[in-house]
Image (cartoon, rainbow, N blue to C red):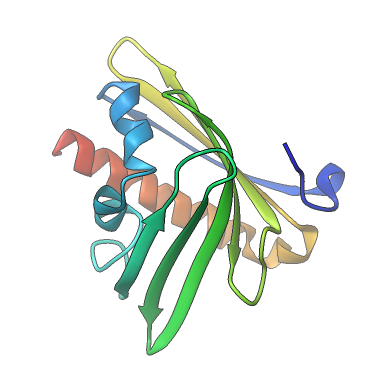
Length: 153
């Protein structure tokens, strides 16, 4: 797996959530644009309009999540580094034109008695230190929304 520069001194943001559905459902929710539009992007999460959500969920494949916020288009892009159904996803994360492939997101999905535990680790370049708290909060909101969508809570 290719690591971005400064891999040794990267900032780590973590978020976890136990979701009472099978690991397969959680894993697929990370790769299906229709599901992504319900928990990661769009008006259910924040004041934004989805332009497109495209995935090529294979190792070496890319994604592009283009949204519009306050009249500005933001394209979240990345490359899938590991795709291990149904327990692990690793991908780069960046914004087109600003921070391409500067961070890596690790998703570990572990079966539990009632469903699965989702553990997310987002490694950031140290220059993004001011965004650590905001990044953690955003991932926690999204994981809670994912749980809500999948369990129909």
